[in-house]
Image (cartoon, rainbow, N blue to C red; front, top):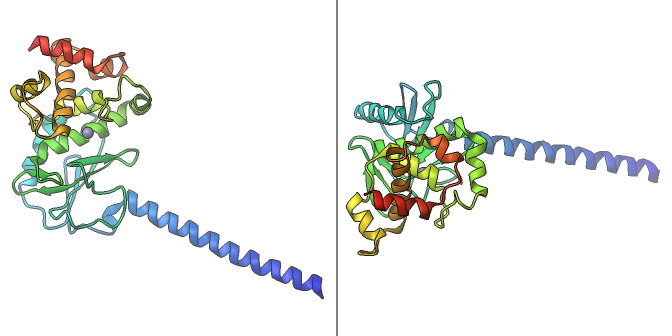
Length: 257
Ligand SMILES: [Zn+2]
């Protein structure tokens, strides 16, 4: 009798464990689906144009087409442009919307690209005026911020391993925590920097303090890559593979100005 009870108890436990496992696997599957395809559960409108798919939290104004034309022109100049690649861009006009899931809209930066999935999210955008905003209200043209983010997608697409290995290379990582070569190249292609060359050089020379440190850090990456491409005629691939130290390059770049 006790043996039979034991067998029944074991079967019952096996039954519950099986269903608990299936429920957990189902939840993980749904969560992964929502992280990879946020368009299935939010966004009010979508535009497909050239290689871009743009999702927005309200009706997308016609100005988006000229913005995407500009983005296309900018990224075509890069060493890593791939006409076969499709881009998924997620925008919102209201920064209080779509905050349920982690790893989607950025809180602290104006935009970011989710590695591996290649989804591009911007903090807050106005498609009618070609404006992107960060959490402090600093603005920049939406077209340049999109070009910057799409360069990350293109770099990952062309040099996946090398670009990821840069996180383990102290010469590629800046003291600010960003990969200066990749960020600098994204800024070089995007243009429309928040800091002018004159202001950036003054900060670099210690003549004035930076108004917003992240903007100055990104100016340094831009200046270094701009110098390497324009003056030293290096491709991004050569920059990525060369053992370059940011401070050394900046010293040379300053002298070249
Ligand atoms: Zn970036």
